[in-house]
Image 1 (cartoon, rainbow, N blue to C red):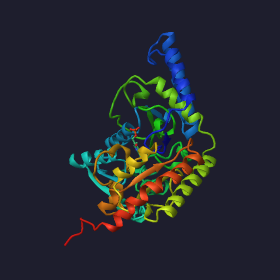
Image 2: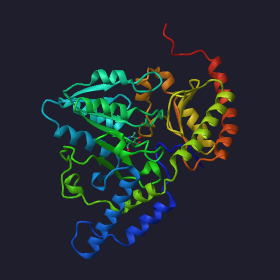
Image 3: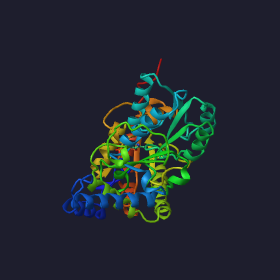
Image 4: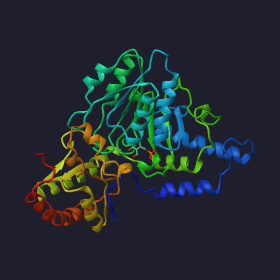
Length: 387
Ligand SMILES: Cc1ncc(COP(=O)(O)O)c(C=O)c1O
């Protein structure tokens, strides 16, 4: 199988599996227990926390372990909002946040919080001037992703963090897609809170972290004695140790990103040459190195994914969490893409295990399967035209 769906999830690395097995069969006691085995487990937790802090440029006390980015995102927004001064009741979200995070935004709006939306341009980039115009002394916090999971577009989170800071608002960055693919430094980011998820960088699923700047006012949405009172619940130590192992093995991300971007660019160029109806979104702007979001004319994504499946290639239609549904992507909608084009969206996401051979295979095999369908498409009159 050729796996080109790294933005959905990644295969746990052998070093990660090894670290987790070792953890589960040795220091498996409760980290809160006073006895010897409990203290051993506590030490293992501390060691993992130190690794996360070192790799991501924060202090160990700033790492709060969670069950993944969905929880980290919710925790950041709810926890920072609850701690904001009463005059700050406005929250800004970008229109292209992850679908689960948008559900939180809508729930907040229904509960009476004023939610304002940061717009994106037709190329998927954030409109920073529009963001600046929405800032004010009543803003409690801004929540913005570092990189979009569908288009791969990099967001100017540092510039927006500066705008938030200028009006005394807090800044949350969902760095789930960026961390593990490009260098990230919490101290330099200007953010107060940052979400990450281990399964996006060859770690296990169901574990992540919220990096929370020391001294930031925060009301824990899930109180408890663990994680310095910021998140209750016995820590999932094997998964946490696996996440630390995944971060530790990342290596030179700049170099890897350059290699992956070269493969992605070769894939796009080859597809565009063989199938001129191929349209790539956000191709001209700064993107995650492995992400390619495209459509083949207006061929239904289901048809394309089925053909890919017969070739043994795994790809995705827009956000993985919404695949299976026929709703056009909210990201493409925010970019002003018409619904019939959005319903043709295919996402290839390459990763550190993608090879030249994988791209060559796809370029050899896919165009002959799609070309006849595209010819049919251009000769069949559209049924969706209005009178
Ligand atoms: C940008 C972004 N945020 C959040 C999430 C949710 O992460 P998790 O699976 O850890 O809950 C994802 C996963 O697809 C994502 O891409």
